[in-house]
Amino acid sequence: MMDATHDPALRSWVAASEGTEFPIQNLPLGTFSRPGDMPRAGVAIGDQVLDLRAAGELGLLPEDLAGLVAGPVLNPLMARGRAASARLRAAVSALLAAGGRGQAEATRLLVPIAEARMHLPAAVGNFTDFMVSRDHSARLGARKNPAAPLPPAFAHLPVAYHSRASSLSISGAPVVRPNGQRGEADGTVSFGPERRLDFELELAIWIAGENALGRPVPMREAGDRLFGYGLLNDWSAREIQFLEMVPLGPFLGKSMATTVSPWVVTAEALAPFAAEPAARPGEDGPVPAHLRGAGRHGLAIAMEVWLETAAMRRAGDGPARITATDFAGMYWTPAQIVAHHASNGCNLLPGDLLGSGTCSGPEPGARACLAEIMLEGPLTLPNGERRGFLEDGDAVIFRARAEAPGAVAIGFGECRAEVVPAPEWPQ
Image (cartoon, rainbow, N blue to C red):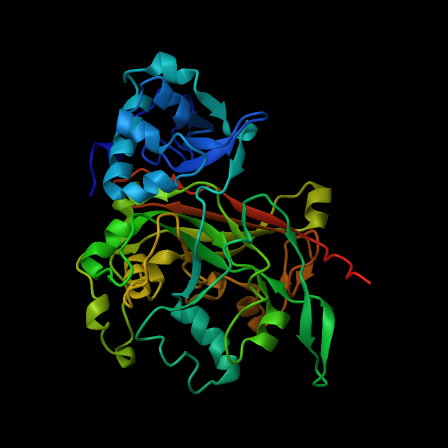
């Protein structure tokens, strides 16, 4: 639902917030710290972050909401559900709006984002990774079975697996190339550093509220469980993954690292960018009845992947964009993901993280991982370098932006990580 916080005419007293990823119409949430301080909740506005704990201590936020953002993670706010996050958004918008109350006090609570150390927004108890792109699934599936490239269940449900929460890292943290077992061309299996390290461009979906164990979440309630969104790099060790996947699916090929962007763009902020669910091919049949939802429960988010090599950094060159796609084209929506996840009575908890799965589109330039890009041969970069898979020193950068007619465009901030060499195996 759109309200006054989405008004395109709304302006902030924070200098230079207009035209940035974080205008007053966005107000994403995160947790940050400065040297010597404990992590605390904050809201991004332009190139600044507003200290929410300090704002609450000064009485600039409603008392009940101030207690929810006084700690080092957003779980207490997430636990209170969408109504609480909507009230917080309205209060912060009023505080930061030009001519609003409390400007003199709030000015002292701004910290330059460049000086803030960002942390994971929530304590994540569970992380589930999905598969929402028909194009991604069909491209890679065709290598194994051109006659039936999609998993048998793909048209019936959002395919997923339970991934590793403990190896989640915030944007900026390095990713260590893993060691593991790899299948060789002659049929033998070797052990050593992964030679086909890949990225996967995904949407991070943060959960609000909680359903009791045994109680499903129907589609009419699924939207209320969507706290907000970010960007997620589901790093993939392809050699390790391909050897281990049959019959139980990914394990060590995925569990070594997942990078998450620091800012949570709330579901309220994305209301102007709701989209109709993507059309289904006729041969797939209708959406199962329990996953049908009324209204625009898709999202129009333009997503990009940029690659920066060590040679680019040494030369002072900027990164090269290698992928441009849009989440609006994904086969399953976030609400359908939530409804399916809880359809068996699984209890989703505040701060749970869901990965959308690789967000590839139908165009050649919308392939959102190197395994897909490599189907047409190695990638040639503007400086002449070629890449099959990632090399040590490569930095992968995700960016995203939501735009719609009559709305102020908003961004997500970067999800970035650099690959560092595998450790030597202990003797």
